[in-house]
Each structure stands twice: as C-alpha cells, then as structure tokens.
Image (spheres, rainbow, N blue to C red):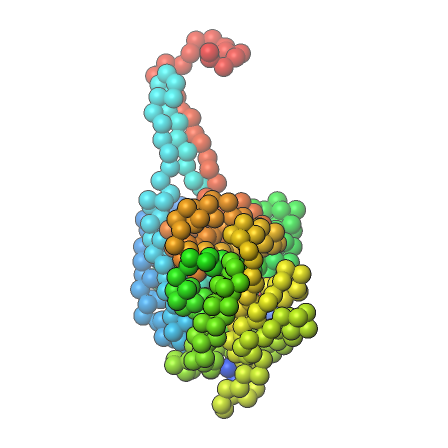
Amino acid sequence: MTLIGHLINGELSNEAERTQDVFNPSTGEVSKQVAIASQATVEEAIAAAEAAYPAWRATPPSKRARVMFKFLQLLQDNSEEICRLIGEEHGKIAHDAAGELQRGIENVEYACYAPELLKGEHSKDVGPAIDSWSEFQPLGVVAGITPFNFPAMVPLWMYPMAIVCGNTFVLKPSERDPSSTLFIAQLLEQAGLPKGVINVVNGDKTAVDTLLTDERVKAVSFVGSTPIAEYIYATANANGKRCQALGGAKNHAIIMPDADLDNAVNALTGAAFGSSGERCMALSVAVCVGKPMQDAFVAKMKAAMEPIQVGPCTDNSKDFGPVITKEHQQKVIGYINSAEADGATIEVDGREAQVEGHAEGFYVGATLINGVTAEMESYQKEIFGPVLQVMCVETMEEAMQLINDHEYGNGTCIFTRDGEAARYFSDNILVGMVGINVPLPVPVSYHSFGGWKRSLFGDLHAYGPDAVRFYTKRKTITQRWPSAGVREGVQFAFPS
Ligand code: NAD
C-alpha cells in the first residue's frame, strides 16, 4: 500500500514513527497510509529550513517571485492530477476540487507581486539632512498547520506569501488527506525553489508540538477547529512565536422580509450544501425575519433541494460528495438527531442517504431543519456537514443579536433590497467577513481572510496584505552622514 511520506530538504522521506490509514471517503476503503513523523523528523525539517534561510533571504524579491510565476504554470498544467488526489482522499467532486484549486492559484498570483508588496516606506529630510525609511524583513523559519477541508487551498494561503517574503517554511498538512498537499509542494521545487525552502512533514500532535516549541520556528499560521486553534495560539505565544490561528464557524444568513427570495434560496442552496457543508464559510443557519418569510423560505428551499444529489468524487454530475470520515458522518447525523430530539422539524432528511454501488461511503444527504432555537446543541456547535438550520425572529435587530451572541464570527450575509438596512448590518455585526446578497463572502486573494471572536486568535488575517505583515518584521532606519552636518556638542533632550 502507498505510504505518503515527507518532503525534507528536497528529498522524499518515508520515516515514520507510526503510520495511519488514509481513507477514500467515496468508497469507505483504506486507500493509503500516511507516515506520522517523529519529533526527530520534524527537527530535521526545521534544520533544513534554517540552513536554506540565509541564501533565500538574500535572494532578490523579483527572483523569488519568478519561482512563483513558474509554480503558477505548473499548478495549472497539473490541475487534473491535483483534483484527482483531492477527490480520492477528501471526497470532493472534481468541479469542487477545481474551484478550491483556483482559489489557491489566486494566492500564488498575489505572491507574484512580491517586489511591489515588499516595497518599504521612505521619508527624506525627517530632520536636518536626516532620512528615514522602513523596510520589511523576513522572520526566518515559519510553520503552517492546515485542516483537511481544503488540502490544496489553505496551504496555498500560507507558504507562497511566506516564501516570497524571504522566509523558509515547514508545513504540517492534515493527516487525513495529505497527498495533494505533498504533490503541490513538489511542484514548487520543480519551479526552481532551492532545496529546504519548503518542507512538508506529515504527522499529528507530536509534529505540531515540535513546531510550536522549537525556538528556531519564528511564526506559526494555523487553520482548523477552534479548540485546537486556541491551543496553538496559547502554546505558540508561550514559546515566543508570532501566531495567527483561524478556527471554526457558524455562519448565519439573515433573510429580510423584502429579500429576493429566489435569489436567497439559490444562494443558500450552494452555500449550505456545497462541498458537503465542510467549509468554514458554509452558511449553516438561515434566520428568517417574520413567520411569513420563514414559511415561504422553507417551502422554496424544500423544492430547491429535491434535485440535489450526493455521490462519489468521480461523478462530476453530482452536487457534492461524502464527508471526510465515518466518525464525522456519525457526528453530523448525531447533530441532526439531537435537533429532532430538541423539538426541531426535519423537513428534508439526509441521514439515510444511499449512493448506488458505494454502500460503505461516508455519505450524508442534504438536510433541512426547521424551528431551530438558540438553546439547541445543533445550533450552538459547528456541524460541518450538509445541514441547513432555519430559525425565525421578529426583527433584524433580533437576528443581529443572535449572530453577535454566537461564539463564532467567521462569515455572515444579509439578503435584502434595503440599502440602509444592509449598511447598518455590515457596520454593526460582530463578524469578520460580511456578504450583502452574497452568500459566501470569501475575500479575494488581494484582500485578507479572517473571522472575529472565537473564529480567529491573533491580530492579522490570512493571505493578502495582512500576510505581508504577518510574515515580515518592520525595521525602521534613520540615517545621517557626518558630512551633511552632525550637530555640535552633546544633546540631552530631543530637539524642540
Ligand atoms: P482540526 O483542528 O482537527 O485539525 C487541523 C490541524 O490541526 C491538522 O493538521 C491536525 O493534524 C492538527 N491537530 C488536530 N488535533 C491536534 C491536537 N490535539 N494538537 C495539535 N494539533 C492537532 O481541523 P479539521 O477537522 O482538519 O478541519 C475542520 C475545521 O477547520 C473546522 O472547524 C473548520 O471550520 C475549520 N476551518 C477554518 C477555516 C478558517 O479559515 N477559519 C478554514 C478551514 C477550516
């Protein structure tokens, strides 16, 4: 059986303290094994990154960017293979994998602007014959720890920007679907990146803890669930590292009485069930303002859900694939059961989804739950499955209060024709990414991505302009040359 190993200093290695099964979620079968790195293997990767750093730091940004231009081309040339690998281990259908890869590629496009992005700030004559400027210097070895749900895109949020800024990188992908991540990192080497600048170690908590505590690692970017994000942030900080840790989500859409209902239903169908709901920006709660809107919304949504089909990653005619593991399938079904037990109505039930010829696959069908309230566990927790919950409130303020009171604040959206209401909503809602008639307000690569509250620990968001700040340290230089007139005598106070 194939063993998925590591990429250290440009070489593939199969060193494994242990191995773990990698499943094909569409069939339910174990398809590969992944090597689980020991502390020593992770230290080897850190050492390789540290050794590669001085030369890479000294490489001009334009030359670093040229590697990214080649990488971009290789990603496009190999897109079919990447999507196949994503599908095999994540379960994503090819059209969905292609969308993920495209979003990742856009982050590489942004990284190609490195010389422009790294331009400093300069002020001439800040004093008599004194000039001052700020420049942005790399940090050294930085690490990324990524989740299963976007094995291509989320790593591409991190290392292209870290690397063009002059850092070297150690990536610890999700052990549940590591192949596409490893394959893509090899393409970066093919693009001409010197050995050791990118390293990939597969593993679990042992690998993560090594990255969090090794003093050679200067910064950590994390994306995953909130309990782990909180742990990563606290541990990285306690070890003196810069950290950004993006966590889980519960994204609400408010449907106002004046909304274009057809548009809202269309948008929510894709945003709730696309990618089996395994997106941190999935819209999983529809908050209808007024009972008439709730009734109309549920009726239209049920009709819209009739043709939805779940199927294996190999069938491009299907709408979404299985969830990641058997345990996760059971967890999602458990949340549907708990909503029912708490008194909600299961309007469309995906618990018994069957896919012909794939009886052992980890499928959950699109599910619609009505009459959900804030006290229910299914509302409070992130389900991370193809489940849309419907709530009803009387006013927009009540809907906003609900969202503001929730522990997560990743994304949200309002459907309305009222510009004033939309403006009030976007101004006052305690959520990091806001859509107005846009269901998945994922920022493009030249903005930055991040939630509020317990959806992000840290100050700077992922990718875009914030990534330049996260992966560099500002240095400010003030200069005067003696021939341009050094002041006579000692000065004990600032000049006034
Ligand atoms: P996860 O937290 O289980 O795993 C993420 C990473 O942390 C993996 O690399 C994993 O190996 C590692 N990890 C897991 N347990 C650990 C532990 N005890 N100690 C140290 N490291 C550990 O997340 P997941 O299930 O892979 O991904 C789904 C979650 O990620 C969801 O909550 C989703 O909302 C979130 N997510 C958030 C964003 C965002 O931008 N906010 C984006 C994608 C996914």
